[in-house]
Length: 85
Image 1 (tube, rainbow, N blue to C red):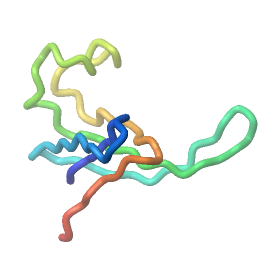
Image 2: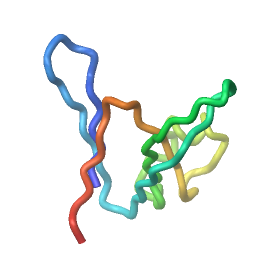
Image 3: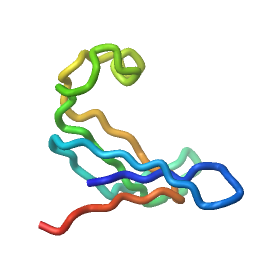
Image 4: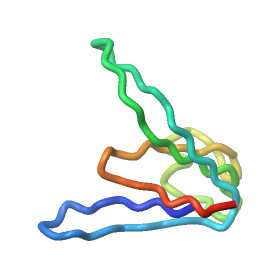
């Protein structure tokens, strides 16, 4: 799996990243306080053992290194490439 984020430039620029350990992609329905619903894509990194112990995600999420299931949502203009099995 490779995740690509569009960058805010006047021409097409992509920032892509991936990792070799297990990842999962989810399509989820999110609800707003006003009752609106949107479909979103989330990527979960199921193995963070290769991440640096001081990775910014750990203190932000209040978790420790090697914690499974670090997930994030993608904005509508981003995409995820998933290899065929």
